[in-house]
Length: 609
Image 1: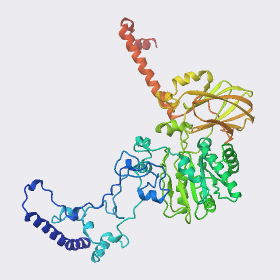
Image 2 (image 1 turned 180 degrees about the horizontal axis):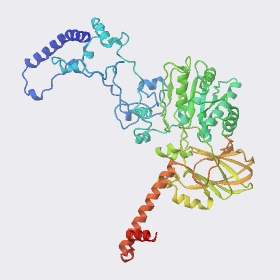
Image 3 (image 1 turned 30 degrees about the vertical axis):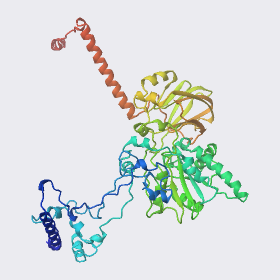
Image 4 (image 1 turned 90 degrees about the vertical axis):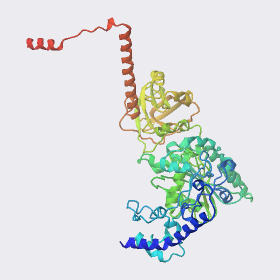
């Protein structure tokens, strides 16, 4: 009752100016004759305007310069807005172009507080415009001191009740693509991706790293541990090593020389078995990075951004190396985890930090994104678009097939004990043949996504497997038509050796898929089949352990195999019925059947008993 009286008092103070405004509008309409009153547009009173102003239109995206520089320069950000989630230039004129966004409506902090309560404005004398909430629009917040008490009584709290505190701090606006990735995990319109220019690392980032003067440079080389060789940016590592050598010589000669510091960040270590030794893993990473072209490393960090492992140590190391005015660049392949890593660093720092868009979709970041609030002083942190590796098998797969290949849980070994003349398939993407071996048995452990179906059988049946099961039981590819789209099925030969069968000695890894770990005592010649253009490398074993229980011949237990078997069984039954019906129609005499009187036969059986 008190609330109703307060509201009536509030309405009484507001109805007077409203009535005066209505009288003024009525008098102005009747002061001049109207030719066609039914089609005359009445002037809209100020209290019927929309509550939030529409965002100002910016120039068409076709006139904007399509670059991947993002918000590296403040001048670029002032020319047109940059999405803080992915770094693409934003526009609000064409939803079919990259960077489209819509500005959200401003809401008060307690807009959900009374969502489930019935409105108390039920008096018939109150106009519909007031019931829709125009009270908030016509009140002068600066001069309505006497209404603040009413608001306090209505909201029930002095902290959120006053009208001066109803405006919420606006959140950073992101493009519609980032919004779809954040909340739905997929790109809203895949056709828009083709309208973006290719990311030229040498032109966009490389030329800034090659500068002999300016701010100190620190490069975070981000690599996915589950796909180390496929996600390792060899060209970037070679470029930084070359720049470091040149600038180091210039600096020693007394000339200007900005020597970039290179930090190798190995992400997603939570996907490896917990039994792995961190010391052994770091030694393996350093050795493999040198083989892949990395020069002098300032440090190596093993990180799990999801579980915050090693993030604090990495941040301390970066702050120590970058200084008060330096630049830090996060560089890596697509889907290596750069944005997730930077968000984890921002979470470790706390405060107001730009949140980058992260999603299991390759190429989430589209332009350079300057992340504010992470590093102290005037130091800056930049996230860069992921580098595309066309030799990764995952880059040829569609979204549905990538879900099967993507590793999202801790890897589990699947070990086979096979002999010469046998083969192992990883889906329809990779096959290993044991062609010759000095050992009686070879132990092959598969490290790949648990969603991928496996098969072990004789090598002589490989052609039949390709024709009959690829696209069905062995997925990806999904569907027979996708086999030709992925490319030609080619073979590579490898000679491997080992000194012990109880642990793996070497790995044969395919970029973007997984690897075979080989354990044997002796030598062997292996044939590896995959699609043409896919990188397949031999390396020292990353995970030497194998499974205690061995897999059996045939298909592995998988939902894909079960569904494919059911579909194949239904098809065979349907073909059998069709064939039987066709035979019955073509030769009706042959379809006569011998009818047995079951009742009579049952009676004879009873008589015999």
